[in-house]
Length: 66
Image 1: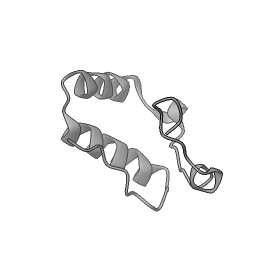
Image 2: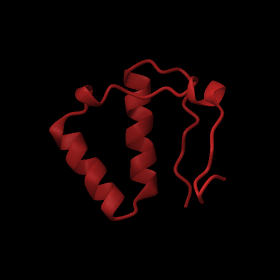
Image 3: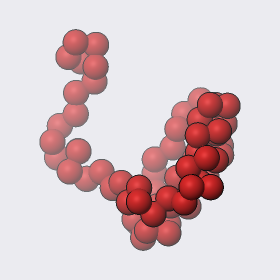
Image 4: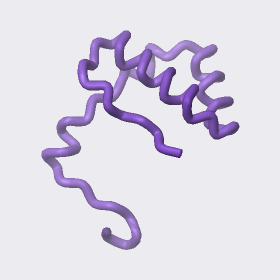
């Protein structure tokens, strides 16, 4: 920790796969916002997983924990 924030090694950060945010529809943006505001982690996980699959980002292990 550095100043109360976690630190990450650069080799870990280089492996991150992030979907292209420009491909998220307005409807999905609204659903993501609502799921976040309602703390609906199952809905968030499902939507993120679908975008990873759509954009062919092979390793889908990211999951928000409760």
